Length: 195
Ligand code: GRF
Image (cartoon, rainbow, N blue to C red):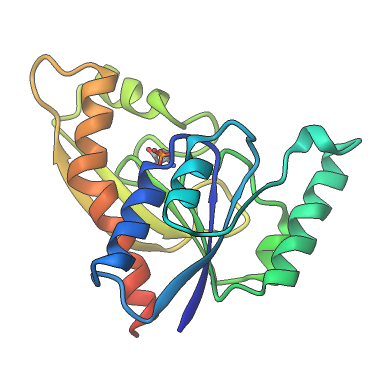
């Protein structure tokens, strides 16, 4: 049984997709044992509670500096000992110490076809704004392993999504979530849980 820790910052629709997939059997041999948010107001925390999954907030505001915040994240993860850490809209750069301790056991979902529209500054709606500004006809989502860079780790899964005439960043974001992210992330976890 793969022990999974999901890290979130916001709405948690990807977390919801994971928890539903565990419940309806699209993910087997895995259990989400902990959800960690850096944001006390993240709706993802409510979603975790409604599925009966333990959740905790580790907020940078509770610590004197960034280093102390990073240390608290590291300590909590070492105590939890997850087999897999899933970054599902976690808007904190993972400190090197955590990447080293959990090497090859951290995955992230990014809402574009990497290497397009990724790296520093490409998060949230900005990714979709950039795709629309460039005029691409196809975008999508990528699940990749996390290494020391920003969106640079080995790619695990990708799924393409059409850009439609009249799209704005919000309609495109929604389509990428529905047609790619919410399918891809559960699939990736199931693949890792059933090698
Ligand atoms: C998603 O678009 C994901 O690809 C990105 O952050 C967003 C999180 O959305 N990394 P949600 O919190 O899962 O709804």
